[in-house]
Length: 334
Ligand code: NAI
Image: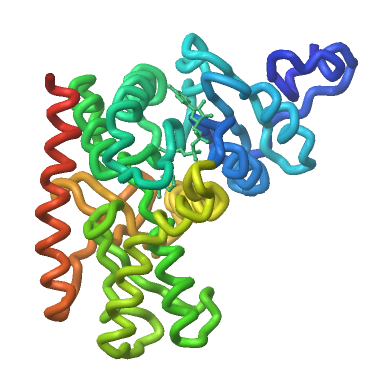
């Protein structure tokens, strides 16, 4: 049988005598939670990314339909589907980049922390798989609460003896994407021209937009600062409420995840000057601007000069972050 698709259950293609096509040069990427609200559009967008040669889609349910569907797109990446826990290691073997949107999303009235009980266990299981099957891969962790799941991942990797802080990256790109959009609206600019650093964490007051460092340089009134800070911190809740029980941000998240994954792949390729915000584990846990290179987050930039409003925000963020980090660390230690 041809091996241009190794997807299980693809019977009609499997029986044809097609010539097998080798994978184009590029990176091997796995998406875990690929059949979910984020996972599906994320899989589609990664199939369109020219830096990807092999795309492994893994979920505990419904992966094969998504794989069959996406595999018909006439782009370079070879797509393979894996369903069920006993396929986790196979899905991960040989991967350069692993993107994790597995886990339950919020419903109205829930905080990201309310997801901890279920998602902590999912992230732990997945990270144990990564430690066994692709310990050198770059990990992009999306599953919430990011402020606690990244510490869980770090603990699992430490326990397995493969922890490399450069390679474990919490995805806070959606906060940056939202900040760019909302700030551009206020300034009357094209959002593609706007760059807002967002630091701290990925929940409520831990999300700290640095409006004093917006590019292009600009200034805001105190009312605009309050409005923008509040909207950026609660952008996720805005979507949760509008979806009214049907989940949280999926499409804008898939877009943000691909923007971040693409930056990681350009870094892996050796491109110079790839700089994005991410939740890293060296400070010990904090979202900040990092330079992405061949080995992951190779340089962590200082926060730069903060104004009084931002300094007060930072103190609040640090306090709440410490509690979330502790929760993640003690989950894996106990
Ligand atoms: P969803 O429920 O639509 O999809 C989650 C998928 O994960 C499902 O297909 C499910 O079968 C799968 N899954 C469950 N257990 C698994 C396991 N052990 N291994 C592999 N896959 C498993 O949820 P959605 O909307 O896609 O959100 C996923 C996660 O992303 C949630 O935790 C959500 O809070 C988080 N999120 C993070 C954001 C960020 O900015 N970092 C933004 C938006 C959502």
